[in-house]
View 1 (cartoon, rainbow, N blue to C red):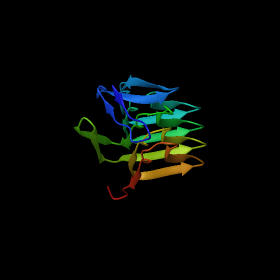
View 2: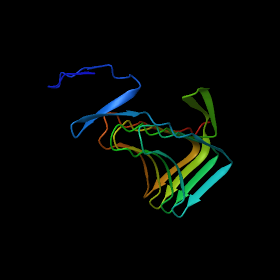
View 3: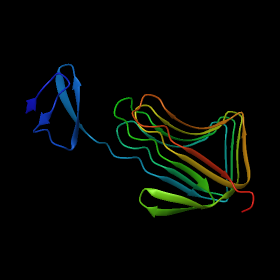
View 4: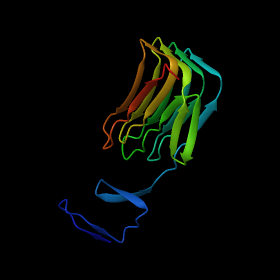
Length: 178
């Protein structure tokens, strides 16, 4: 092993599959954790109330899974939430993407598209749809509805606390002519 210090460091003979962290005078190697899985729900209506949740999360460097809700009507009430979270405070994986619409089509393993909007999405009384990351990139939120998007005393947001990645995009499409 060859190690040069003074921030001009380079490493030789370190296997490429590991990341390294310098802690208390030693280099520690660790391997990437697995990603969490995708949640896919296909239903006419979903009503989540009283602290009910649909979530994906990652506590290590794996990515949090995506959430795809193929629905006509979605209602969240009284602290209900739909969330994808990356909770690792060091080298965390990305938060997943949340997609809400009537029809979601897979183009390949990581690329989906909402092809038909749902009817309505409503959030009431401190409910939320969110992606959050502590030390990585934030996930995206994509919602398509054709009649109504109600958000009353609630939030739709993406957030990155300390990460090198960017916060995700929030894409809301209300298609009244569909």
